[in-house]
Image (cartoon, rainbow, N blue to C red; front, side, top):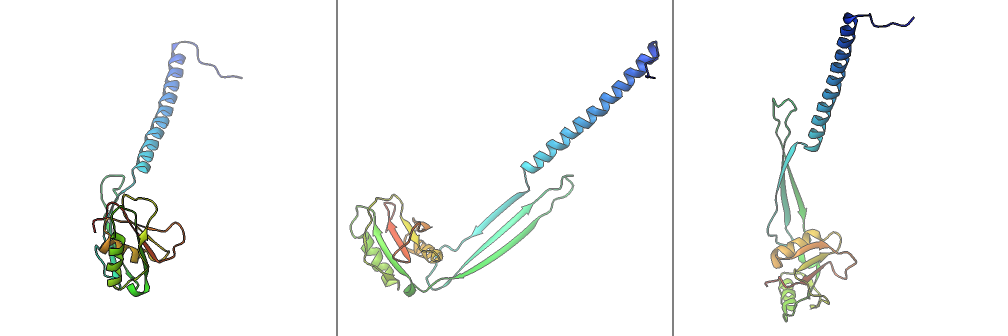
Length: 190
């Protein structure tokens, strides 16, 4: 036997009340779910803030050690907003650079200025580097570039810092005949 509403207004209001409670219940569930979901998405979209600073060595003398310190501060905020946690991590890395006598360097000139590659080659030879005769580079570069063979990144950076401070330092995309190749660009002021 099927259950039917009681005839009259009393049954109507009871059914209306049950319907209103169902709507209220599902409204709270759906609205609460939306609020929780958006708070969760907001939390995922804005992770705890991280501030990072590095203190690089600005000039190096070949044959010495290179030291860099990195400090990281993280400040996550608890979702209740009641507390803040701060942690600090320090890392010190020491890399020993090769002696200049163990590094083969060539300097190329991509500018229209005469003898700049020869002059830098003389300077590097005077600092103890093994050098190859200076030459011209086939393309004009706006900015000087120091390319290095795999494993010579620290030494290339030391040469750039000391002798070609305007240079971009990057690993060579192909094989080199030398350990470090310096190409003087228009930005070179030496």
